[in-house]
Amino acid sequence: MLSVLRVHLPSEIPIVGCELTPYVVLRCPDGTITTDDVPETSHLDGYYLRCQWYRKQNDKKIAVCSVHPTEQATFQCLGCVKAKIPVTKSYHCSSRCFSDAWQHHRVLHDRAASAMNENGTEEEELFGRFSSTGSGTANAGLSGSALSVGPIPGLNNGSAPIYPTSVIEKIGGETWFEVGRSKTYTPAADDIGHVLKFECVAVDAETRLPVGPATTILTSRVIPAPSPTPRCLIPVGGVDLMGHFDSDGRTTASGTFTVLSYNILSDVYATTTSEIYSYCPSWAISWHYRRQNLLREIVGYHADILCLQEVQSNHFEEFFAPELDKHGYHALYKKRTSEIYNGNPNTIDGCATFFRRDRFSHVKKYEVEFNKAAQSLTDAVIPTGQKKTALGRLIKDNVALIVVLEAKFSNHGADTPGKRQLLCVANTHVNVHHDLKDVKLWQVHTLLKGLEKIAVSADIPMLVCGDFNSVPGSASHALLARGKVDQMHPDLAVDPLGILRPASKLTHQLPLVSAYSSFARMVGVSVGLEQQRSRMDHKTNEPLFTNCTRDFIGTLDYIFYTADSLTVESLLELLDEECLRKDTALPSPEWSSDHIALLAEFRCMPKTRH
Image: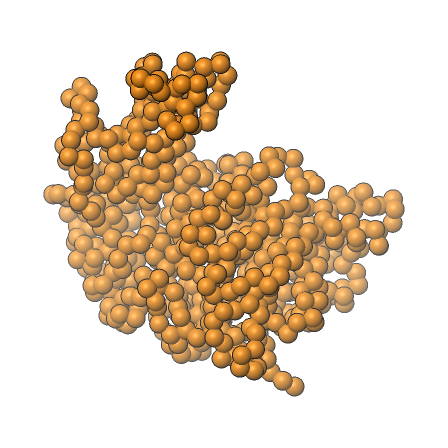
């Protein structure tokens, strides 16, 4: 006989849009133990597992606090309602909660006001374009100082509750409605504020009758998925965007395309280094929540090319590749090598590059394994007695993925009308250890020399994206941005293997420029541009940060481009540190990585002839 031994949920708090799949331990008829599902369509020795989900009906609709989603709301900002800001953002659990959050909350009001008052419909489209919630954009002006709050007389979570017409269960005076008949259930907006119940029981396939007691487990109240303030695309080309937004929200300006670079924080790093991220609620750090939140964010950017780092191989195959395929993306992946990794081989992370099939076609792929380059280097220049030590320092399993694409869109910047427009995109994640500056620099130099070879063989624009684990002003950043490293640079003092000497060899000929330096170089005055300038380091012309944890804040991620063949049209706005600090740091319930996403819109242009 089939029997249920144990049931537990992956997270103590259910979130709208994040599927719940209970962990069910079964004893099979032959006495073996399994966690596999046993549905009616694939019964086991005449038995199957019947699963049902129920929602507890409350006497009144419950709203949850937008700041503390595990708490019930008692206050509502009426200013949000007037400004047509998503209603879930208007709720607070107390007047103190609202008062403490006002400095960050008023940003919603300011953006709602500017959306109409400054640029009307055009700004609304930009504002809504990168909304990861799918909710409507703010479309009513509201002064940032116009504050109106009050106790909630009748709660409304953005949609009317829709319940089944018949009551399924009444137990001990409680009313439960059936909402699902499978092992997995994805909470919807109608579930917000309600407790869910999962029930499973072994059933005889012939009689269709239970053969034992049902096992049940209750959740806490369902909370809405946190929705961060949408990030705008800021024009930096000195003119308005040449094009319009189509029904999918993508820009269709002729000859332009968008590129995203994002370290999504591997689950194995988030959980094995949990003490680093102890400030993040356990439900928000769990992979079942983060994967959905990351997907919503990434899809919401509508980028033509995605360069993701720290993508676990099992998550690539089981989640990101199939889910992004639904949105029209072709997937390519390079897993890190595993010479020093001793964990589960399925959890090894790597670099994943996606591109829209309607915008590009795949021409060629190059895989860079820095371990192989390390082996070649030690064989060539390291004395026999030092090879083991050298390999121990150089072999770190880092990789890079280089993809050559062909554009399908029209390109008015080509040298010759009708000429194939190719594009080379490099995606990498450089070694993380801060005390191995020589290894970081060697990896970056190795990658750039490989890209130089491609540039020589083909006249092709290039993008170099990724997490370089190198701050602005470091030797690695200097090599990327300036094409060389000053021989007196302090980073060169760390070179125990002598692999950086002579320093004069640390050069490349690619005309690389950091995309986000456009914010610093842009001439003109606008509210959006000035705000972005305030989030830049004017000494290095790079963002103040792309990585923000409790113990570190700084820039590690970049999008470099060849300035002789590409020009930056617009950039995704940077985030404000003060707004992030309301949740201590990243990751947080709103942003599911410790890094922020970078996105740039480029236009192909003819190379200057000399």
